[in-house]
Length: 327
Image (tube, helix red, strand yellow):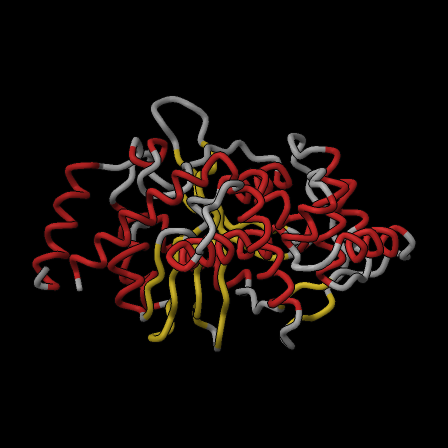
């Protein structure tokens, strides 16, 4: 099983490299659909996972990878929107990132309107990404006439609040404790703040379940295996407390390289997610907060990420973990 797991991981990394040129466009599409930087990143990751999983059962050859990814994103979006765990959320700006295209911001204003998700997808594909009607119809499994009607209806709607999935963010007080312990390199203290059934995720890389697993993977790596002497700071992003991670290199000005998002249950951290490998999300958050940012590519094989690794310490850590697990 270990051999099979290693082979799948290698193929997954090749898949990420193959799709990397399309990631910005895919993220813009998901951002326009969801109206939320967090939900957009979730939709991107769900799309990539489903696209990867379906490669083995796709009979026709994929001639247009962009259309293939957009079609899957549209299907995932429609499926998610039909679930009962969506709630209305107050309006917020699309982005303050100065590099975000005017077309995407204009699309976001249109997408505040209460539309069935398939209609919303049709409008974004047509007005923002300029797909042909026939291409949109194929992506959404509908007819050209239905696409035309969807676009026409959307343009006649009045603005209403958009919808997004509910989260239970962590309190500022809890995150202040987390930041203090992290900056002191007190791994035991940080670990004690996690629930025993906590979940940790480095988005696009891996998920760990349980306090011990999170401690021995994502937390340990972040604290001890990267250059730049990372320092944590709590910030408010669109009304939610998050933790940004600063890195300093030589005498240069520190830059933000990671953002952590949390969920809290009964005064403890139930979930923490690292957005280290999400360049578009990092860039938008940094733009909103007016912070300097350095992105890390789309996965653990990215040169930007590997350049920051304390290689000797990392290899020693990997060997120790292999001995402990008998691998």
